[in-house]
Length: 176
Length: 236
Image (tube, rainbow over all chains, first blue to last red; front, side, top):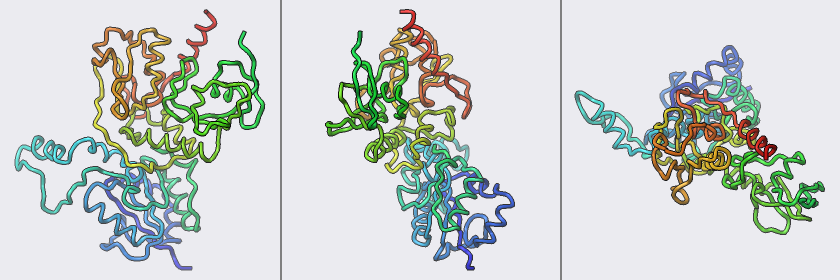
């Protein structure tokens, strides 16, 4: 039996969803028996590979880099899972949205700085006007809300997807 | 003596009293109709649009909480069309302001969240609005967070109809509508507020809360208000 190709991605989030994924404890072994983790912050791969069966994405789309990454991932993934409230609703990253990008950068890097006043521009991606949920820019196949979603919910999602079913999460997660 | 009439709700023949709303009759006959603005003991506002139902012969959906029953009326409380419209109304409530449930004091004890669960909402299809809204912390005991307000007007009604103070009103129009106290002065400077806290108890979300509550700590006791209203009826 060929193993499924699984990837994870971390955009504008706190990594709590990845922590919740790791919190499935020894069940991760049964997942590892059924799928290869081909990309993500938990493994070393540098390039997002082609032909991925399932990608689970944590975090909102906040920067030009996030936007390019999620579009790149969408093209190479069969089933895209929005994992957690930041991916589904833009959640805490969206708290900057009522303010302009300039006013936030000025607040942090000018008003809040004692030396070298001014927002960095080299080597950092441009922030988008708003931090937005994934479904605003790409098609999402499975939504897993929660902050973070429970380890049990994530395990259920992975097992259902590996069994070839789209998970019905109605009683296992909570929106918002 | 009010007249008894007959109506059909989801095909079932029900006896109702003239003047009752579709919501009341449906509830008395064990039918579930979702709502966020309705509260037993207060007048009906029809503001949340979640109790929309079909009435035979009328080409649009009507709010069950403000539509009185009429003799011979036939009502459908759930259908594909109704479910579609209710879900859309709920999504628009989430997208209109900054709810950010994960950091809300009412997280886990919120009627808006509960309804999302009941109606199976797992994402919002519309772009979020991200408005810039103030938080009024001028009152010594309570907080008004406009980011969480769904303009259900339960607070407006409970303050006017039960407490008799009428501190709250809705100012502005459309998307700019906003809850105001005492003709748009800070709540803490209100001359009419008795600090009774009924508005806080009936608020379905984290818009009106007690000070000093951390995330997930704010629970509401809105049954108190319904009991007060019922006792007043008996007394009268």
